[in-house]
Image (cartoon, rainbow, N blue to C red; front, top):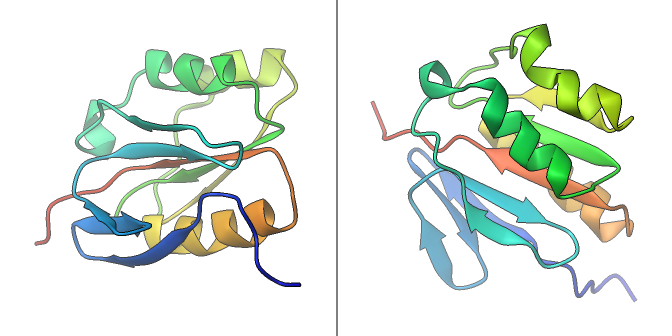
Length: 121
């Protein structure tokens, strides 16, 4: 009864996350309704408002933003597209974002994880 058909993040480590059998080494967007796409954002310093506009267009109720190997908050102006659509956003490091996404997706929430996957130090 605890099995879910939603895409989940099975493992993660420095410089990668795994969805199913695939190990992903670049930043990625994963959605609980089956969305999975590359997120052209190699590091937190590369973020722009456009990255969050892309997330807003996916129409989730909540975005879990994984900011990389440490927690860093996006600029408020970058979040305007999400705020305008009344989409919640939570920021945490990417490892915590993976765990949080899995819990929320498993509960049936319409959630998107936007994960910055940085190369290992």
